[in-house]
Figure 1: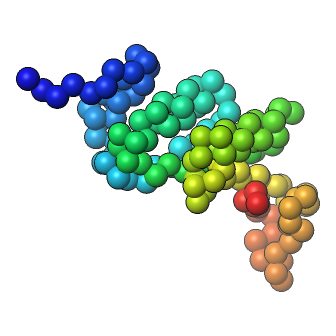
Figure 2: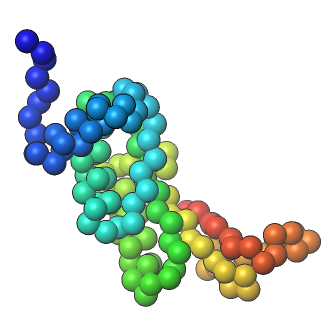
Length: 129
């Protein structure tokens, strides 16, 4: 008789089976989870957090803030806080938030300038501290 895995919430069991069936990663792998802060990615983050010990995963949480919606900063803050609460990495701390700044805009975290004008006209990405 095959070894039975611990029964968990049906959603987590479904994620476990999907990971195995599609060989999405191996035990002990490092996985980057992109999270928007919406219900789907939040559910995935929590399911992977529940499966982290079983698969011995190192999980990095990432969020790209395009700043296209008025709620975008709230989404980024939510994902960062969720990463800290669940203790996902960017070095086993909070999540990593990437903000996109358009040409001519100034980031509150950087001067958004490049040496000698290199890269002018390209979006900039900075990582939250």
